Image (tube, rainbow, N blue to C red; front, side, top):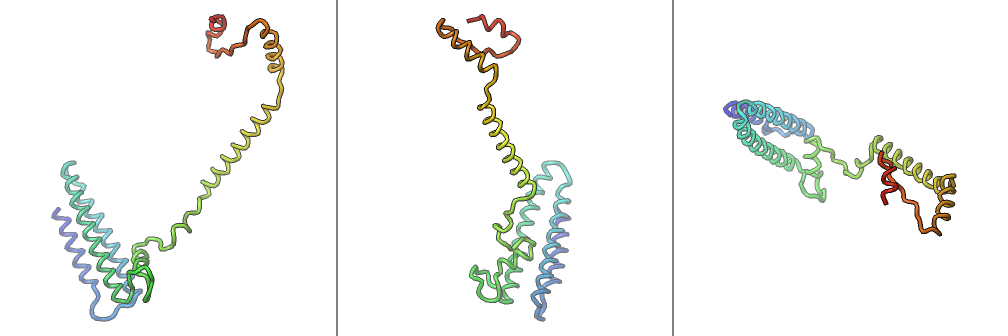
Length: 190
């Protein structure tokens, strides 16, 4: 855990070096710095997780919990600071979009999350389209086969109808027996 605190101290020093001075920073410069700080935080997260992966299973579990809590705290602080800096440039967090822009969309853009609506991205992939088309073709094929089989009158069907007509006055019926190797015995079983 001592290594994690060292990494944290280094990151806080880097962040303090990157904090804006009194000179006014342009939006592009600020966004660039925010992206860099976000990647630095991600690198710190990786380093902390590597340090936590050393030791016995019980130690790893305890370290992992601490590291996860620390990472969530640091990411929240970083997001809050970025939001404050962007709001100082005139970006508001309101959904109305008044002022110079929407802060939420800008923060998502910094984090690398798509700002477009999810409905636009819900286009099915080629594989999904291909599988759907294939299943429709297979269903249509099965339906055609069923229709054709229902129209066909085979010799077997004619023979079984004639046999049923002859057995009906005698009070006998035809019973289907599952062919399993003992079917000859099951036929006379009743």
